[in-house]
Image (cartoon, rainbow, N blue to C red; front, side, top):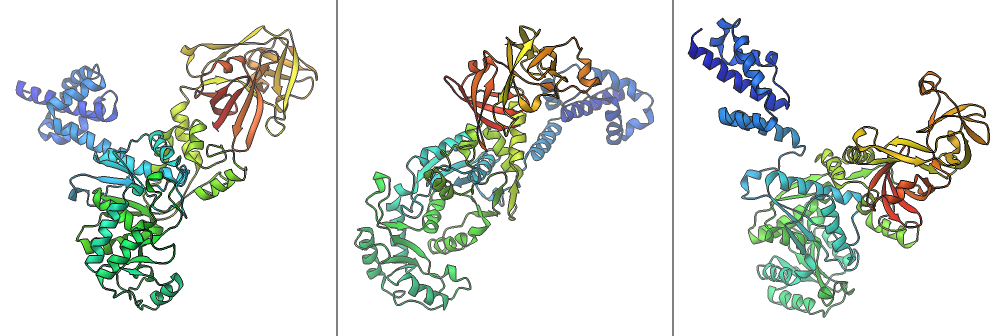
Length: 577
C-alpha cells in the first residue's frame, strides 16, 4: 500500500469516526467505522487486512476529544456531514408537523387569542405551548391578542389580562406583541364602513327569530337591499349608541342560499348595553362579533397560520367572505380536536370554575382541585412539563384525552435531582391511619439520613430523635414484631413503645422487616399539605421549617410538594408522587 492511499484511509477514517462519535455522543468504535468506510470507498477493500491498523490510531485520537472538539473538527473536514447530523437531530426533536406552505411566507406569525374572562384553565395552555414552540422552530413571531369584544356574555375580568400573560411566561414564552381588541374599535368601524360602501354589508332591524326563519328558508330580509348611504347612516347611529341591544345589527352580505345556513348573511356588529369593564372602552355600545374582529386583526397583524378547534370550522368560512371583499389572502388554517383531561372532578371551563369559586366549593383559581394553570403552578409543576405534554398530543383533528400522569412524569424528570428529601407523617385517618406518638427506648440521639439518595455529595440530614417519635399508625407492625426506623435502626414494637434491638440491616431483606418513616415527637414541625382531595395535616422533620418558599422537596413515600408558606406551621402544595 503506498503512502498516498494510507493518507486517504486516515482522512476518510477520521471523518467516519467523527461522524459516528458526534451522532451518538460517545466514543467511536472501530466495528462501527470499518463497514461504512469500506462501503463508501471500494478501493480500500483489497487492503482489508491492513485498514484496521491504520484506522485504530485515528479512533484513539478522536476518543480523547470532547464533544465540542469533535464537532469543530468534523466541521473543518466535512461541514455537510455535520449539517446532515444537525438536520437529523432537529427532525427527531421536532414533534410538531411542519406548518403548511411555510415557504410561502417571509416570516411565520402566529397568535393566541384568549378571551380574558378569567385565568387560564389547563386546556388553554395547549395553544400557547404549540404557538410558542412553532415560533422557536421557525424563528417566527408570537402574538397575544385579547379578544375582549363581548362585555356581556363573556365579560372580561380585569385581572385576567395580566394573569394570562403571567401564564404564558410561566410556560416559557414571551409574546412579541400584546394587543387588546377593545382598544381597536375605531379600526373595526373603518373596515365596516368600507364594506358598507362596496355593498358587502347592510344594517338589519329584523328580530333574531324572524331573520332565523328567513335564513333557514334561504330568503333575504327586506333590509338586504337598503342603499349603502342609508346603511352608513344607521351604522353611524349604532356607533353613536342611538340603538339598544337587540334593535339593530350589521350583517355581512354572503349567499342567502348557501348550503350552510350558518354562513348566510351573518352578523358582524351588534349593540350591547352593558358597559365594558375597561374604562377605556366603557363608552362603546356597538361591538364587533368575534369572527369579524378576529378576521380583521389577523390580516392587520400579518398572521400567517391560525390554529383553531375543529368545532370552529365555520369561522374560517365566514372570514373568507370578508377577505374576498377586500381582496386579501386568508392565512393557513390548522384545525385540531378538543382535549379532555383525566383526574379532575371539576369541568375544564372558565365559567364552571368561576361558579365553583363564587359558591365556595373551590378556594380560588389556584385551588389544587381546580384544573387551571395557576393551580399547577402553585403545586410546583414546571411550565416546561406542561408544554412537553401538550406537544406530545400532536395536531390531530380527533378529540384526544390527556392523562395528567404525562405532565407529572415530565415534571418528575425536571425536579427530582434538585428536590431534597424529608420525612412527613400524616395525621389523617384516610392517609396512613393517623399519627401515633411512641416512646423510644435505647434509641440513638440523632439519626442520619441522606439529603438525596442519588447524590451522596449533598450529605446527610441530622434529625434529633429525642424521647419520642411520631409515626403513621398504618406503619406499625403487629405487637411484639419489629420495624426498621429509617436512620435509627431496628425497633421492636411492644404496643406502647419502640425498643431498639441489635439487629443488623440484613433483617430488612432477609426477614422482610418494613422500613418506616418518622419525625421527632418534641421538635416536629406542623404541616398542612394541600392536595386534590383537600388539606392533609401532619408533622415534618425540623429542617423543613428552614426551607425557602417555592422550594420543592420530596416527602419520602408521599410525593413532591412545593413550600407555599412558612409561619407557625409549614403550608405545602402537593404536586405528585
